[in-house]
Length: 218
Image 1 (spheres, rainbow, N blue to C red):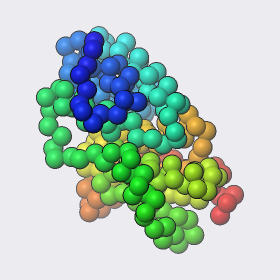
Image 2 (image 1 turned 90 degrees about the horizontal axis):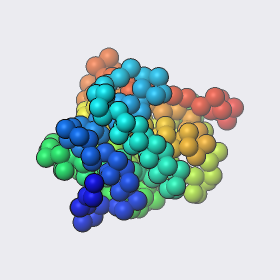
Image 3 (image 1 turned 45 degrees about the vertical axis):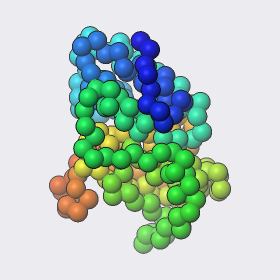
């Protein structure tokens, strides 16, 4: 099905929009949720938004398409943020006031931001308390590779939190997928869903993963 894209929509993400836009009786926004849930289910997580039988073929196609896009683009490029905004608007759903930073702006901001303060173990920590699609974390990972090489990522902990379960899962998937496809490792990734100001027990851990090599570089 041909889709008329928004004026500022990045062309590199169009194949994934096409894969999810024709979901039979399911809206594009629903198809995106099915896609996120299915990706994490492939990784061994419990289904978050179980995919109906009649939509599974399209979701499987979308997962394959996303893998191809991650492999084709530069490491850690934000793909899902633009796709979600596009599909949600096509599905007639509001984004609850969310604004997704364009990739070019996120890269510029990552280059201007100062180096973070290391934690008590001497590791570098990057935290985003309202991570959205994860674009700022992704842009910093991209910048680290470009300036210091992939080995430097072992020294970092990336922490992201968002009240929106879709956003938290987008961030988790994009960080993990890029590590897997581009064969790089971030020292530690912790992505949670909840209010940033709430206590830890009131947040849901979406993804917590550590690199086996992080201890070697301590």
